[in-house]
Length: 102
Image (cartoon, rainbow, N blue to C red):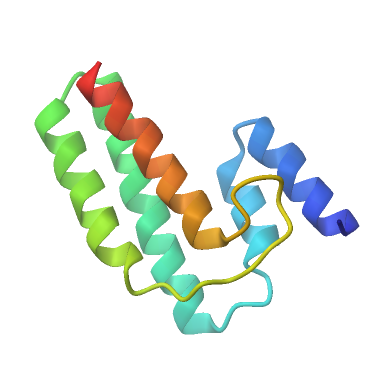
């Protein structure tokens, strides 16, 4: 595991997803970075809506994030688990779905 990947894991555990994502996606093409940022923005919107108890809006954001994530290429990164950036984003979406449902 590279130093950059270890740093990304540390940021992720500290709930600083933006910084972790920046590190993990540093080698992406610009168009892929835009797609990843769109998904992350939708996840953030959902998190805010969950905190404000706006479940319907949160679900809408998460559904849009799922739609957009299908356009992201698989990028293999050596983070603990999951091992791809796409899977990492899916995990974040799933966590927020769980917050809405329970």
